[in-house]
Image (cartoon, rainbow, N blue to C red; front, side, top):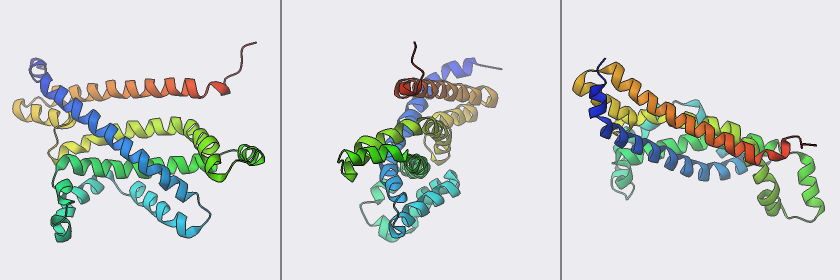
Length: 230
């Protein structure tokens, strides 16, 4: 094994690391903004309101992320209306296509997580809020959504990790992320073990930091569930 090659190519790996981190967290931010209204609509008792978000969730959870990314990256260019509109400035860029694909995908998964936790909100909390005269929007803002986000933390932490691992697909559409950097190093030097295990170690470190961050958040926001010391 020749890890001298890896040392010489560390700048390329760090560039790929930066691309991966920015792409993943930008996708998560956009996806979360989309997931909140999707989850709220999906919990509506009116079927004409809940059906479209539920169909969205089903589609993006039921199809592979790779297929979704290829549909956006390779497929959108075949529509003349897209090529002649301002949207082409987005869809002709690989990075933007990956961002759109990842954001839409994580919005589907996160929307389902939030939908489940919204529906599991203890009825007594809602009744108590109504008894003190809170309006429905105020109940959502002060009672339901804060409780939802706290209870969704463990599942959402897993989604963040899955999104990080799924981001390696971006290397298949010319983006030099961590996986793309490993591919380049392997293609130049034919050191598959060294190149890909190095990328794997970077992913492992990021995953550890994500897990640690969510554990700290759970420790803080779930403090009311811990037994009090006598």
